[in-house]
Image 1 (cartoon, helix red, strand yellow):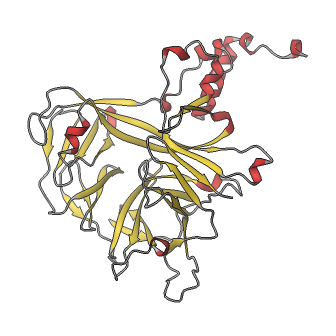
Image 2: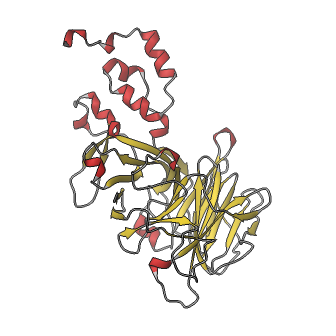
Image 3: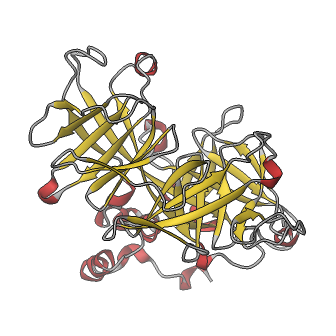
Amino acid sequence: MSSMMPDWSLLPEELLHFISQNVENCFDGVHARSVCTSWRSNIPFPSCLLRTSYSLPTFAQFPLENKGSCTLEKIPLFLFRVKSPPPAAATSPCEYFLGGIRRDESEHLMELPSPLQCSVKVNIPGNDPALLNVLDCQIFPLGHQCRMIGWDLEEWRTTNYRGVAFLPLNNGEFIVLLNFTKSLFMSRSDEMRWIQLKKFSDASCEEIVPFRGKFYGTILNRDLFVIDPYSLDVTSLTPLQPLRSVKYLVPSGNDDELFLVEKILPPTGVLDFCRFACRVSKLDDEAGKWVEVSDVGGRVLFIGYPGNVSFCGKELPDGCGLSGDSLLCTGGPGNVTYSYKYGVNTGREEDDLNFWRRFSGENRVTIINTSPVVALQVER
């Protein structure tokens, strides 16, 4: 029987080249590289799985003095849904992992068999690193996460550093915006110097995201704003019907959509996390306004860790614990949460159906870990 198995290492080089040119999914490229040594040497590692680094200028003074080099790193994020084998598929919880991915360059791995290329090492504090076979997973891209490396992060925390936003331009140029809550600093790659933006609010800046050539952000006083990176003009972008809410910006795809999720605060000031309602809007950037929506195009929006991200849930199979057009908060409080859906009938007359609410008919989600990998178990 073994003599009848094809030896893929003997495939003509022209056919191997044809295969390498027609691999569309990045993890298909990983799978192809695991076939044998010749395939691995002829098929390049997918560039979209590599962490991209960009050199940034140093600070000579405020917010902190640093004479060393500084680098911004873009980390590709993915969601892995572990496919449970039958009969466990009907009873065991569904497992999901969200996080960044990188090549493991450890020397001791170089001599392991090539199928290691089909594995992702999952690091969860308190547990030994585990190898997750991507052949047994359904994988969804979540975009990128940006982080600063090369500077003392403990020192950065004393300066109220909140995050960084990266805006790509044409011809490989880019703009970086640093958020120090009440001070914003911008740098263009063709100038390599920091410019402090003029203060436009007394409240702290919570988050900033890039979208279609501009920066969008939220302020602690529950306002929203947009920054033109060329004129440096700052414009308010508050929804037409303001609500007392905590606001989250969720980008989707490659500048496909920008969603605004508002977690509405009760007028009494008493927080009941089981009865939170949300309003979801998407940006009409041409009209410069938010448009309230009752669906998110089949997507699943994650709020919290490892950042506000989304993916298309239309390919999720039935019975996997999650479904499209839903919100999932991974930022607490506690380690148990549920999906939010639009128009949920809670049975209470005072609960308006025109909001997104906790959907008890959906499965309970247990948050096992949040850093550096988000690990979720979803009951069936």
